Length: 407
Image (cartoon, rainbow, N blue to C red; front, side, top):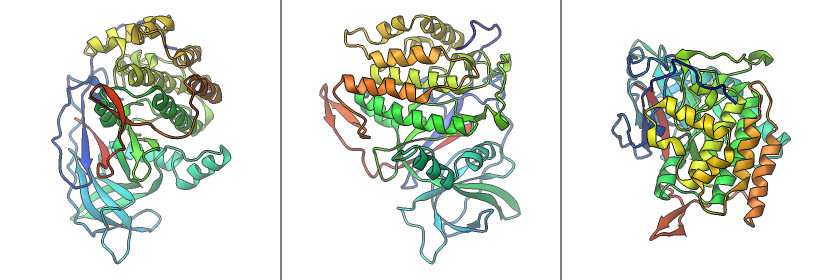
């Protein structure tokens, strides 16, 4: 998958992630140190992260509930209560303009930033190219899916207020992220849940890959449940999405020391560790690491996440011997053979090779069959209580929107 050790790849960036509740209450924004899954490096200056921060960005101004904004198609949207604020961006409930105020059950949210800030602009490019509702619905029909876990893009534009220009984007509203549920489950998901999640994530990855993008940062905190259906999961945070194949021409394999270790260190691909731009095989490799962690509760290199070179070298070593990776993470006899087969298949992919997504899905479907289950679309999100698994539905009042703030 990746090439061996590359000299000069070191350092780790820092970011903050703000989780915001629908009640409008604010959470403290700061660096999270519970695990490196909360550490995200800006793509452009990865090697310098930690030594100097990104350019200072202007703060977003508050908008009053009821304010009307008009998108590029001249459609009007009414803002509701603010449900999140970060260092330079705000998120509000939103609905199409009407005589009524925007209620707490609003179906959409609007993300707002000063127009000269960069993160929302980057994310907008992905949504405009690949996430229009008609694109997603066409894919669902032609591939006979029940749903596709890509947020729908409903509109965007510029809004002037008090002589300042703001960029905004309207997308679907979502529920809780999987990281919170994973931690509530004592950092374990059942084998069925892991396989069900991964099947839906493969659907998502195939879609965005076919639309010339890779995600590069698949992890539980970037996977949100549907606002209305807790059996549906959506991949969010496309601020770092990379257009790997513009106009049908795949980017070439090129190691760049300035980009070493991009992404979330414990999950990121070997290519990313070596400073290579993300590709399809990298997304699939990251998903493999997620599956292993969700099922076993850990990854072998989590003992030293502060040293990204150590993490990279560990991944390279285990890639050469997938069986040893499985022995390390699953010492019991009943190992998930389907995950081993998945990892073996992914490691054979060339950098520019198109994956056989159905082959990977078939491997996971065989795993479901091996445990006497099937792809029924149900996510068995259970909570460990007194050492045993007990079914517990996701609380309907726990609705979160995720806003990533690079600092």
